[in-house]
Amino acid sequence: MGGFFGVASKHACVSDLFYGIDYHSHLGTKRAGMVTMDNGIFHRSIHNIENTYFRSKFGDELEKFKGNCGIGVISDTDSQPIVVNSHLGRFAIVTVARINNIAELEAECLSLNQQFTELSSGTTNPTELIALMITQGKDFVDGIQNVYKKVKGACSLLILTDNGIIAARDYYGRTPIVIGKNQNGYAIAFESHSFANMDYEIEQFVGPGEIVRVSPYGCQQLSAPNDKMQICSFLWIYYGFPATQYEHINVENTRYIGGYELGKTDDVEADFVSAIPDSGIGMALGYAMGKGIPYQRGIVKYTPTWSRSFMPSSQVMREHVAKMKLLPNRALLSGKRVVFCDDSIVRGTQLKDNVKMIYDYGAKEVHIRISCPPLLYGCNYLNFSASKTEMELITRRVIKELEGDSNKNLHLYCDDTTKEYANMVEMLRKHIGVDTLKFNTLSTIAKTIGLPKERICTHCFDGSSFGE
Image (cartoon, rainbow, N blue to C red; front, side, top):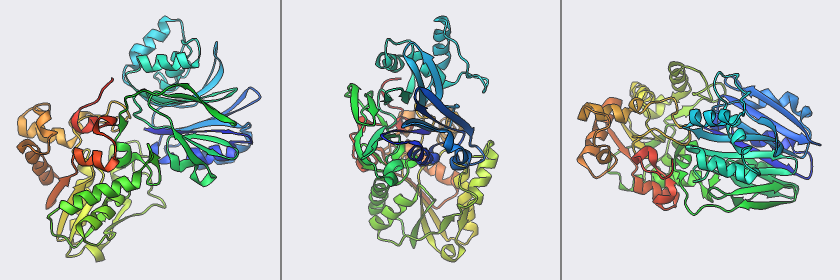
């Protein structure tokens, strides 16, 4: 995943840029970078943040960043920003992208006698590839539309030029871009909460495939948005920070409604509901209201030193960190029947370990409620579980046990009204080792988000999407 931030201000932009990028730190763990432009000169830094934080890497070098316009990124993939000199002029670029046909596009660029220079990772840098594709156009808009036409996957981007920042949202709007405004200028962000403490108010959400240019003095549309949109539903379920909005729809409220809808129809008997923190909290609060039982913190997260379970490089270490940072409250759990709300089940190993820990601390019954449907497909667009094959998904392993083939009758396992779905959930329950297990349905997801089903991407749940 990843997130970007840009500022076009009448005054020096570095402070707003620094804090705005930092507020996207929950979206990525590998690389971070920022760049400003002053009198045609770029000031850039890129750092590895796998074992530290954005603030600690960039805080001591802010004096070197000059200018009123800048962009930056937190990235789970490549080193960015990339700085380019081309027939379009000098520019810097950051992206949030998943390019599924990168080898094909790389070969095309090489056939046009273009060259790649950002090879320090040993592979093609996706952001550099996007930059080269843009320079194939007669202007920036033509170049960005070239990206839209040829990239299989998804790509949103910011381009810093000598006359402002160009923002282009993914062709089908699978990732978001929001523009904020204050008395000094504009901010452009992946998540709206990132500029709230700097007195920016939401000015507009960039539409799917829309291209705009932002300067300190205004926002100009360069290309109109598409009619079709499929924004990722998992942004509300898991990725999004609780205070942010996508398409004017708040993340925390969506999670709350999802919990409420599940709680009001759930017939389980329990003493209280708790959350697997953090993304399960909003759902658990809603569930408590819908079910009419108390919300208590049966598990709490220890954040001072165990804040990012996905930072270590190995899966074994990530799972160890994930376990160590969650602390059960024995005084609340002992002898109790407890409902726990969580955002999703991917491999299932981490949740299974958490459940064992809860029982070991004295819980009488453990009931798991998941805010989304079962994950049955890998994501093609946002690098969600990018390191996992579909056979690593616990649902696919269960389907293989049931059918002898992990790909058989998937349409039946996506449908919560079928016996196949019920059999899958029951086997998942046994694998995880809980008293009961329930998931929210696809129809509930659309209801809680408040957008028509066809305007949200649910590919990881039912395999549906349009485009490539």
